[in-house]
Amino acid sequence: MTDKDKIKDIPEMPEWEKAFSEYAKDHAPDLMPRILAKINQSEVPVTRAVSPAPDDLSRSSAEPAASDNTEEKASGQRKRFLSRLLSKRSQRWIISLSGAAAAVILIGVLIAVNSRIPKTEDRNTQNLRNSLTPNVILTIAAAPTAEAEPKGAKSEPAEDQPSDNQPSDSVNYRGEDELGITPQLTGLYHLDDGTTPHCYSIDDSVNFKHKFKNGTATCSLSPSDADPNTYLLQDVDIAGRVTVDGSSAYRVTYQGAETPLVLLSDEDISNKHFSSIVIYHVGYATEDDRSYLVFTITESAP
Amino acid sequence: MTDLEFADCLDAIRRREQDGLMRIYNEYSAYLFQVVSALVSQREDAEDITADLFLKFWESPPAYRPGKGHKGYLATMARNRAIDYLRANRRTISIDTEEEADLGAVPSSADDIINEIAVEQVLAMMTPAEREIVSMKHLMGLTFREIAEAVGKPQGTVAWIYREAVNKIRRCGYDR
Image 1 (tube, rainbow over the protein chains, first blue to last red):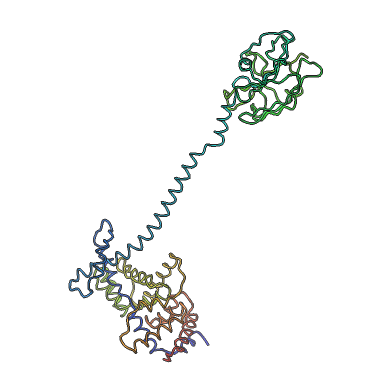
Image 2: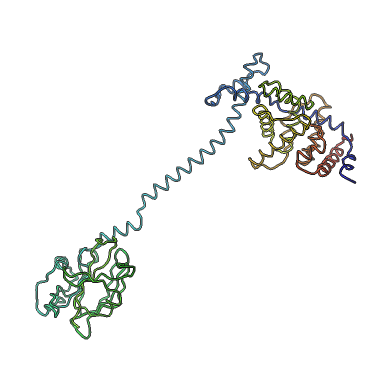
């Protein structure tokens, strides 16, 4: 049986067709007023669609349908149509605007909260600035044999601010060493808070640890067995060191302001003897705005 | 309404004469509404789509050539608009006959009540595809070929769907 045969085989249903047609006509909505209202609205220039007031809407819906005035009837139908149209659109607009407003408020709150929280880097930098002693953090020097007034600007803060922890009998002055450099202080001063120096006896091995902006400097400093006047700097590990030409290096200077800076690597500075070591932080006056430690080192005589 | 009369109505619309639109509306609005209702579940949505269909006629009258079958043309337009609406609103294609019954006109006599209940019972048993094809066939008077073109299905498939619908109609007491 072909499709045509199947189609021919389908019986006609006049009774049903009539019933269905009547049903469709009975249940057909009266759309013409709405269509005419829309047509009139689109053809009459309207600058702005204004939603009718609730009173107007209730009045128009309460008006009898059998009004003789066709214009009023059309106006009421138009209002009903507009109110229905606008209510649907209004719902969509309200939902959209509510979502947008909520998003804007949320973003604003997030921005406000974020602005009140100090950034970690800034806070660390501020703490570092507060804790740093600009000139002297660590000072160790070969002890002179004869007593002498300590001199040198870098040692003054340590002397000017004696601490109760500073053992006075551990300070020994040994005079100028063979390199002709006048040692400044005997002892290791660690001004961890910038105001109170702590003094360590040079007779002991000292593990030095200092936190600074870009990391932590650690090293072990101990009197040399071969030469009691020299000190062995070991296990140097300084993070955040100055980077020169892509390789890390310590900025090391021999004691003395006029002495040019010498850049040393880990190998240069480790396991060597120094008669005078001054380690201090110089702050942020660097080309790359990075803090670093300056080792003022007086190398022991070979 | 013949094809020529339909074309005349379109010409009247182009001349911005509302009478042309009224004639098409009076002839087909009820049937087109049923076609749309077969696809759209909510009666209000079906009303909107049907009204928009006639507004579309008014705003941009189609360039219709007489002889191609304006009923199928109208049914296709109504169906496409309903499908566009469904795609835009992500609605499922289903028929809510209860709502239609609530919003329907009040029957005037006992026979009308019985008739209406019977029709609604039949429509409730039909699938959307069956109701769509039955509406096109029985209300719009389309041929199977025209229906097949309108719904984009093979003619045999349309006939098969229609046969299934007729069986349901028969089971509800409509033998003829």
